[in-house]
Image (cartoon, rainbow, N blue to C red; front, side, top):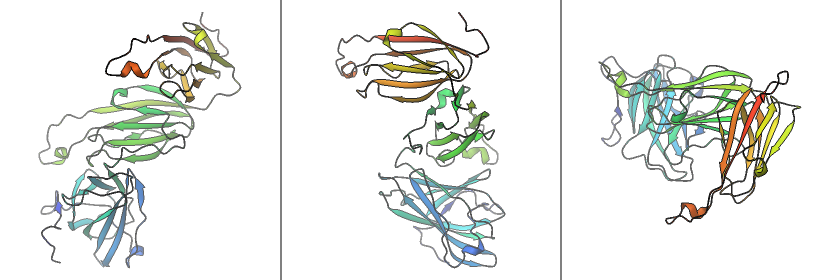
Length: 362
């Protein structure tokens, strides 16, 4: 089959006896121009389609669509290795493999996609396997978490490495890391993955969202990776590890409710595990910072600077310990080119949490 020079694929790593193993195989049941199911995430969707099929292989076309409301300049489609299928030829994308992950990224001429626009790339595959799950990412928008609240309850970044935190069942955790980090792995069943996009080897920022679904403790871990690690000989690129330990607990019930306001500034408050702390502050106060984590878990929060609405939040006491909540007043003029002399008023309360059957610390 003759291909134009413009549409010839640059297939990385295809050399004598080293064809790429891929999981983009589509089942024989999909033969006859039947499309595979599209998976929409990360600002784009990718759909596989069998153009024709024979006893030892098939031709597959993948359609990439920008599902974001803004334009994209690059995209990447990834899938996991399954079975023994191999790529014999491909076009309109640059394909690479690392470990068990295969990635197709746009060619120089088909990365720009307007909202709703599509492009295609194709492959000639050897062998028959199962239907894959294609993951698609682009740079049109920074992926956002899909919970109904409009955002995750906890955001974790590179600075949270080695952190331990506590969340309640039903809360969501979002992990945002650089493009050279692999999508994280989770050590247990207390967290369920909601979404993942980008990360090595897509060249796009890595974002993953998890929902706490059951009590338990898990580690969320990942590490950096680079294409040269899979060359022969491999490079000596340093590997950066990232781990966060998460304790998931059920929301406490039947506890007391204690409210603190500006009148409680510099006060010490004693709670039992299961109690709820309500923080009510005027609109000019920033949402309080809570440190250290793992003792109080924020259930909800509204208002505070710069919303113009009074701040109100509920915190659940989930573990024994001591914690400080601190805030400060703020104003728009403070952040202008010529900051105004408005004084900022600090607010802080200290909270000690104990078990019901133990005496609160004095």
